[in-house]
Length: 315
Ligand code: MEV
Image 1 (cartoon, rainbow, N blue to C red):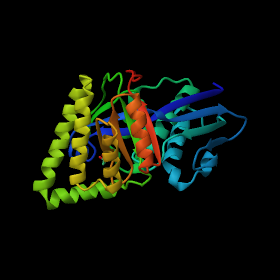
Image 2 (image 1 turned 120 degrees about the horizontal axis):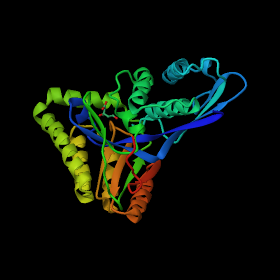
Image 3 (image 1 turned 180 degrees about the vertical axis):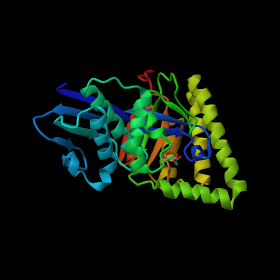
Image 4 (image 1 turned 135 degrees about the horizontal axis):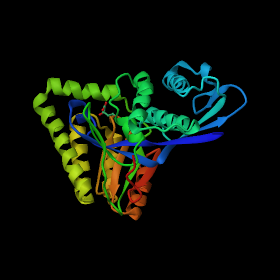
């Protein structure tokens, strides 16, 4: 082909951050409006990449982009394209280091673009295995949740090292508002904070983790029944547990309160906490707009609205 594209999405953890580390289930959801597009064009000579962090030949990519470079080298080998000249352009709407799975989304879009360009069919299993090449370099010990969500058009039900399945649901009128605090969330710091709490104060922390697991299970049921009121309550309950575990902060707490004062059915931090984003569930588009405006006034650097009516199952 002369030109091909690959797409992927931002990931948001709806339920189960932190407790997923201890074997509890999580629900993550792709955000359609926050996407990555990779485009490959045939050119006369060279192999070049154009992205937010680099513009030039693939073999001169910087050390901090080693994950994606290794993936591209692997793909050109696998597809017998070591001598094919191309330009690869990556356009990403994802902010980095906000728990939205920026690196996994990039990997998924690039893999899809390469396979489309060389007209080779790609299974979901193969896609996730290839994305792991990049994620292992960038993140060391990835759970796979980011790539599973970035490549999905449906929410994901996820248990570490066990289950990774797309789940169907139907919430025709409600939407999720996502608000970026603009603060970088330090995942490793948040994960070790929860770990020390479990070691030092198990009588406090253990039940909180157990409850987060139960909340995720109840949420799956509520999703199947399109029960947005219950989902909202479960989100607020998760936020309380996460705050008690020490991973919220003043900004995130305030965003959750502001969302709820503006008709949100519930709100919580998403991802590791200590920064990053908050999500709020809105009953309808008008409420979503109001929540989004209020969160920007409260200091959110960016907000997105994800309506649920166009989620559709695909592999
Ligand atoms: C971070 O996005 C999610 C955490 O549960 C950590 C992890 O699952 O590795 C906090």
